[in-house]
Length: 278
Ligand code: DGL
Image 1 (cartoon, rainbow, N blue to C red):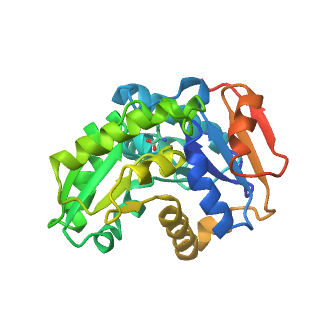
Image 2 (cartoon, protein in one colour; image 1 turned 90 degrees about the horizontal axis):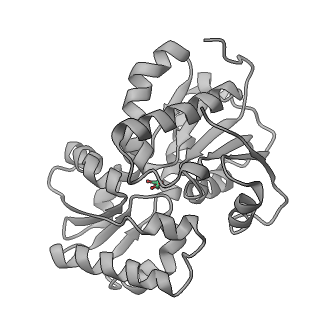
């Protein structure tokens, strides 16, 4: 496939706005690079969709970022990391360009998970797709087989964020319901992983309904430090990432809606373009 060969921006993909919680941390740790963020807002949420659909949508998004000149793309989305990462790496990348790289966010999230828990009981909140995939249980089982993981799917949480209702009183009902359900299933949980990039937007409410002794594990910093380490270990990829300190945003929905949400993260004027994925 004929993809641009000159150095390009680092691509960051999410089904919608959630990846902005990861991108914010990446950019504050690694401000020197140029970034292209793509949110498939028109088709979010992905969390309730089947494997085939998440794979196809993610495949289209990643290919469009490569076509825009990215050599390295991060799936800042747990659902896409759980359901599409391996297939794209194994089936598509060899056909597109063996030198492009696609990274997920599940592995960086769990690498230090044992340091957050004394009881060895860890709770996980995620989309239906992430929870049903069992990806976290599989990855944690490889590194820390002594940890007991209990997962709870929270299907209403992403729509609350995508519809800008995350800080409204109505969101409390759904947040409380799932935290109580999870803790009722395993009262020994002392670490709670937010395994969906949208969930940090609900953090004040999540904290409100979570007992103080429970650590809440957010992915942003973990993914940012893991990316920094990756770039140090892979100079052949690092040198293909341009360094102008810029941000560009693509959305499959209206630009003004995206601007409203992105302004929670950055005050500065943003360049936002609407694109179509096929
Ligand atoms: N933010 C994504 C995740 O981390 C996906 C949410 C969705 O589209 O359902 O799983």
